[in-house]
Every structure is written in C-alpha cells, then in structure tokens.
Length: 341
Image (cartoon, rainbow, N blue to C red):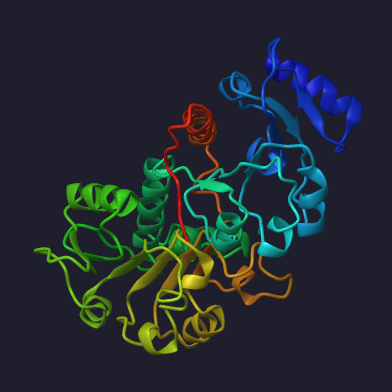
C-alpha cells in the first residue's frame, strides 16, 4: 500500500526526498517540506493526498535556503510550523501555485510575499479543537490536585503526602472561574463547554457583546485559571507581560496552548519565581524547543509540554484529510480555507 511503499523508499533514500507513487496519469507535484514533523511515527495514511498529486517527502525541518531547494519543480507545498519567509518565497520557481500550511496558525508564512508571487496560501482550521481543548482541561485537572507536584515529591524521595496530612493544594474545579482570552473561537468554545459541564464559571474577552464577556483587566483579576486562545498578531504579542501577569490572583494558573509569543517568557519566569501567580502550563513556548538553559525546564510550578496539543494520531490524521480536501478544492479551482495578508 502507499504507506508501506513510502517507508521502503524512505529507508532506501534517507532524507533525500522520498516519493509516494501516484496513480498513472499526470498529477501535480506536491512537496511535503518537513514530513517528519507530521508523520514522526510513520502511522499517517496519505492516500487521500496522493489521490490528488504526486507526493515528494522530505523528513527533517528545513532552513529557508533548503526550502527553496526542495520546492524546485513543485506546484504545491505542504509545510508544518516552520518559517516560510518572503526571502524564500520570492525565489520559488514559477511552478509553485499553493502553500498549504498543515495547521491552523499561519503566522510563519509571509502572506504578503506569497500574494505578490501569485501563490495561494491555505490553512486547516478546527482540526485540533477537541484535542487542544482536552489538553487545557487536563492541565486544570492536574493543577487542581497538584498531581505534578505530588510526583515531583515522590521522585525526590519525599513521601510526606503519605506519612502526614496532604502537603499540597487540592481543590475542586466546580465553582472556580475560568477566564478565556480570545476564547470565542472553536477551541475556546469547546473548553468553555467542558468547563461549564464541571460546574466552572467561564468568562471571556470578546470584541462582540456577550453575556459573559469582561474587559481583560477584570478577567485577569477575577479568574482562577486564565487560558489563552487568541491568534498571534501585532496586537496580541506579549499580551501576557509583567503588567498583565501581576493583575492575576496569586492563587491563579496561566495556561497557553495557543502561540508561545502571546507570553513574554522572561516576565512569566520572574512572576513564577516570585510566586506572584501559582503556576503555568505551557504547551507552546516563545522558542520551540526552549533554549537548553531555559528555567522553564526546572521551575517546579510549571507544566511544560512539547506542543503536543495537535500530535494525537487521530488529530494528525484528521489534519491530513483536511489537507487533502483543501488540495482537491484548489485543483478544482474552488479553493477553501484561503488566508490573505
């Protein structure tokens, strides 16, 4: 089958670019710039994509220079969370017609440069809404029973939670307030629905009037958990900084499953060290992975995960199927999920 064929070719050719055989007949050439970030476990079925085009796979992430090399002769490019800057796009061959970002966020693609080159850019909204929402809830549940803190104590040989009364915070989520910054989209709405089913009060920031909408400052001052769900742009970069972090309750927790640069990490580290807030759960970071010397790795009041929100197998397969749908629509001259500058 297509998957086994892909694996055999990859084993023979390593990282030099592995082709998924297309059916007889002319099909556009599609380059998967960094397939290894998507199909890291070799379990994804790319048959729906191969039905539309001939796939050329490259496994590792690529520098802008390597991207230019890999897209030669291609009509369609599929990338996942790597910078595709204007300096690379302007050097793309004239054959390139579509950049398909295999994800929801598209801030890594220079949209203006693509438009100037006559290249369409598409994304894949909503593919990970359930998975990311579940991760947000997982973080809150962990904080509510100090699960990570308890495991850290055991790893240090500290068994006082067993030999004495419980030594860590332990509370119910019912009755607590969850503040969602930009939480009216697909993921935020799912988080809100689950949280409300557990008896939590949910408040949001919103440009449109909503019964549970609050100004940012009031949301930060009254929420027990603050979760970030806004896109990253010039208005939202570092929306959580020293000033806004210090508005939060000292017992509150910050959760980020959106984009790392929504938080100014140096300010977050400072308030975490001082105990200005109780803790943070970060599935995304300003630099991914964080620098080896980053204190985020060692702070005891931080839960740090390597951008796993979208990485469940079912989520990634859904992503590939949406990519296939996008390609089919584009090739039929009826493009969907197009993003503009």
